[in-house]
Amino acid sequence: RNGYDARPRHSFCGIITDVQQRTTKNGKPIVFAQFEDFTGQAELLCFASQFDRLRPYLQVDEVVLVRGSVETRGGSVKIILDDVMPMWKVREQLVKAIVLRLDLDQTPPETLDRLHTLCEEYRGGSCKLYFEVTADDLPTPQRLRSRKYVLDPAQELFQGLHRLFGRDGLVLEGEA
Image (cartoon, rainbow, N blue to C red; front, side, top):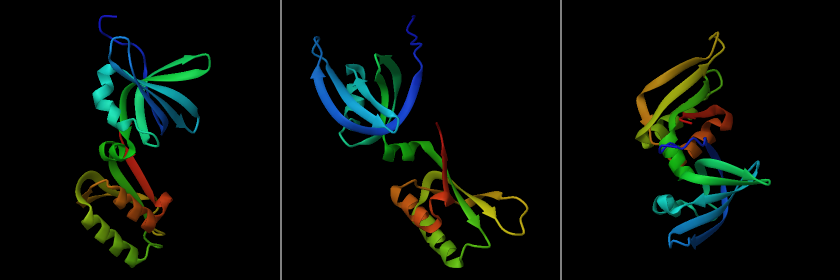
């Protein structure tokens, strides 16, 4: 093997439903956690080498992104953890751009005023802001980047944008 681990890594988003911490025969900590997503469930294994870094995020009812290698035996799935990230951290680290879909013929000026206020409040983060603009006199949607705003990807910002533009009016772009 020469220090190279050839097992492919996979990422899953779901909820932790049970956590048990144990000690190995060598006296090292290990965590077993039950994890569920829309496709089923798996057991998460967190070994001593990752324990200190990952243990704080292995909490019951925590919605997380997990990364690791997958083992299947007899219908059961185990994920050997490389990383665990709570969803607030996923948004903070992986969302790189916000795209707002605006129909200039349908969007009232008050909505744009509220958008301006929201952008001022969450200005100064790491997310670029784009507008996908449509209008009756535009043959195709135009994508425009805001030169004024780079935003903080806070939960409250997304809630405000959802209220203004609905779920279909907001697209998040980021790293996989």
